[in-house]
Length: 113
Length: 115
Image 1: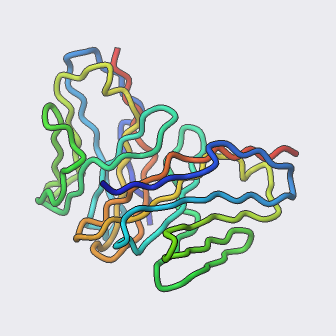
Image 2: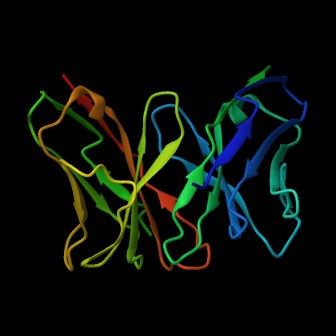
Image 3: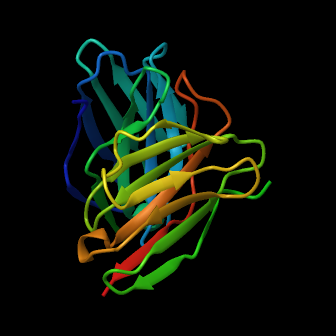
């Protein structure tokens, strides 16, 4: 079945450094790739997404890149801040009319002041 | 525009009882998805509904679980005769459209604990 792999599972960085999280997906028909941030006890919050017709998208300190040939997509956070500390999930949609999301297993990001 | 609302936020049930979880989508959204998150894991798709229709329930356990999204009122996820393994966070998400990768907005979740 469809699968999304996410690495690393944990990531610790110093405030001001960059953080990169990588995902691979298996369904070649996927065309929508969102990233969610989840803080303790809360629901996932969409932070950025990308569709298959573009290779890169940026929103202030956050950027996402997509390589459809290799089925890879990555989240880049620059100038990290302590409030960026959370669990980040990548996801890919499945086609066929339902658009359910297949999620990665998450990356726990810790930003140390 | 209020976000996706879920209630209750926390639910405690004893084994064998029924759990009923509610989800009100964002205004104007007619598509609802339910996901389950076990501790320290990612979210797993359960069911996708439109008003009065179940479109995809491929992620739902075959027994004890059911979902509905009536013409009026919230979407309901019902778990009958709960067992300890049902303890998890249940999230619903809504989107205005589907079929071409439309954004899903998540609610705060219901954390179910089965004693």
